[in-house]
Image (cartoon, rainbow, N blue to C red; front, side, top):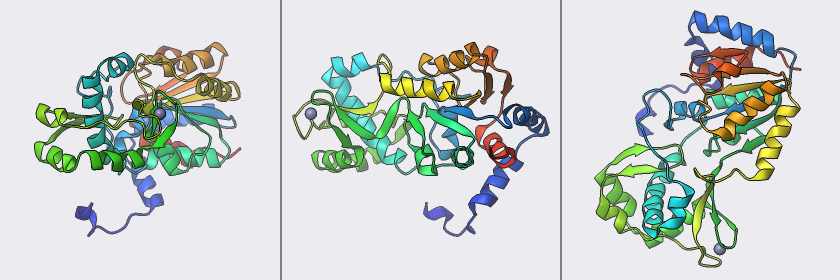
Length: 305
Ligand SMILES: [Zn+2]
């Protein structure tokens, strides 16, 4: 952070203009088609990890991503050793993720909502950067990294509160982890650490209310998205005349089903993503590009309703 102190401040408008200026002319051509398709229509937006890569949060599945298998719900529940490893890595990952700031792509989505263009925003990201950028009507489909849930009494706790509990239980742990070197960060605040002894020394916190098992409040692989979130998301798509997907490869069904739902209703589907997605054959228009620049261009060009 201190390394940037000597640079002149960049305003949000200047930053957005620079982001949009990085678009190639072929990309602008496709964006003009998207503009024509979305103009005068309210649409729903579905976002994924590709939106947060410009905030320094790596994607699981984007081009160049290292192959990685996230922990499943069954693994988390089944083995105390898995929970210890998971929480140790999450403690390191959270201290990194909580410092991330929203980027121009998040700002552009918030602007689309402010101008009355959206029926709602469905995000597969747990990083809360859309909310930080000012988006209001958001479904956090896969949960929130800033909350922790007790699996026994179902109470919710703030991750920030838990961080200080974990600090007290594990004095000096983060410093030792930093010295050992973090190998890889993941979008769910998981961090890969090679030092097995460090992980085995980690003390996991129990629920402060009932001494039950705590879990980050996001949906693991092998777990279902809560019904109310799914219903709210379908309602956003039902109320829309089009669906815009940005920064998701639609690998998991929890996101792909909304694309199928929109297509089945004869609604236009627009996909902006770097690389192929599982919804490409259902898209009216697909733009293979970075999402920050494309969304910034659209937010600047689409007229308010
Ligand atoms: Zn509890």
